[in-house]
Image 1: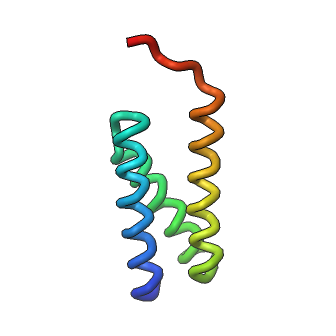
Image 2 (image 1 turned 120 degrees about the horizontal axis):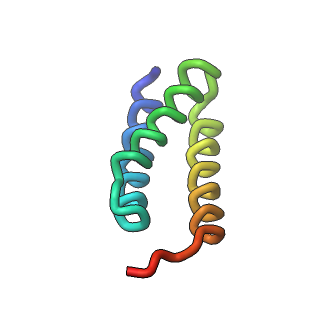
Length: 75
C-alpha cells in the first residue's frame, strides 16, 4: 500500500469509529470493518484511491440503510 492509501484508510477508520460510537455505542467494530474493506480494496483487488474511497462510501450507504430498517431500541 502506498502512503496515500494508508492515509485514506486511517481517515476512513477514524470517521467510521465516530459513526459507530454515536450510532452503535461501539466504534471499534465499524472502524475495523472499514480497515478490512480498505485492505481488500487496495491490496487484494489492487484498486486505486478513488475506487477505495468509493468502497468506503458504500459502507456508509449500507450503514444508513441498516439504520433506516432496524427497529429503534426502547431504553
